[in-house]
Length: 217
Image (tube, rainbow, N blue to C red; front, side, top):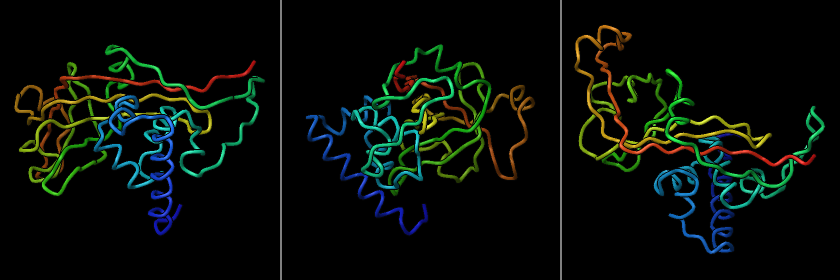
């Protein structure tokens, strides 16, 4: 999808989302909670369209009882038979992950997103992260949008999803940010780029969602 087509696609997706909410009698806040995201992040996803965060749209489609293609393109997705002989049927189904499962999915590190509220509204940035004693560490510049400071708690999200198979998971953690200052820990961590510092998010809430599509025998 090219950049010039993104706004129109995003607008159409948001309209289909709103129409489906009305049909189901759901509020925007209820849909966001069931998909494991904040209302502000949900609006961000709909505003930027499918190119921004496909796994988030996959979760929203599951909440609405739609296939991914029905939400983003207004048409049913083609369902091909799997190599194991089982066909995929119906929209994806959401499940919940326990706290221990959430940490297990994160592993020791990888790529995620940090979201927080800045002076000009919500800010969402990809970050490389490390897990240390049930906290999340990432690097940023001292004057960057993801540096600790005013704005309240930050949200950290990691997800993996296969749109075609309708399978995947997401983990969302919310908590305060602070700079890592312990000399012993800093000595073990990779050195940040020039003017960069390590930041720690200590989650006060940890939630996770799994997503799968039912197979027809």
